[in-house]
Length: 216
Image (cartoon, rainbow, N blue to C red; front, side, top):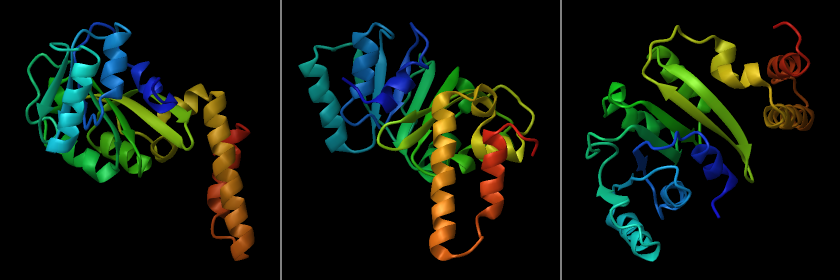
């Protein structure tokens, strides 16, 4: 069984599409997509021999020859022309940015991105590129993770609030997003109390206004 984080990514993959999973490691997500008949073909890209061998072992173990394709590739450099959807998860923002800047984003239907760091910087980057954030998910899996689905379709730049908290998440306001905001709020209040300072007062006020639907 895959983690809740990977499950949320899988739920954003359209059926019968060809996927390229960048940095697939043990190919847990590609296996899930194939074994649940979400996809008929998934490429698992790796930049190092060790992780690539892990993928090859997974292919043998799960009898996925011809369906799970190991690819020795720096990012999307060796992606085939039949790829529809790109998944980049479990990496830091700067690595993700490098991968995006090294490929033709317009070539793909959409990307599913889960950054372990600086999600706001990722959204700012997408906003500056005028890309469209089509969907977002926030999931608790030991930590809170945010998954962003975006395409190269043109979109007006996002507001500062949308960049910080996510345009789709702000509109949907599901219970996980609210729990995430409350968690962030509690942490900021505690830091202020311990430091005996008010350095996060503005941020605290901003989150409270979002939580209680007050005008910003």
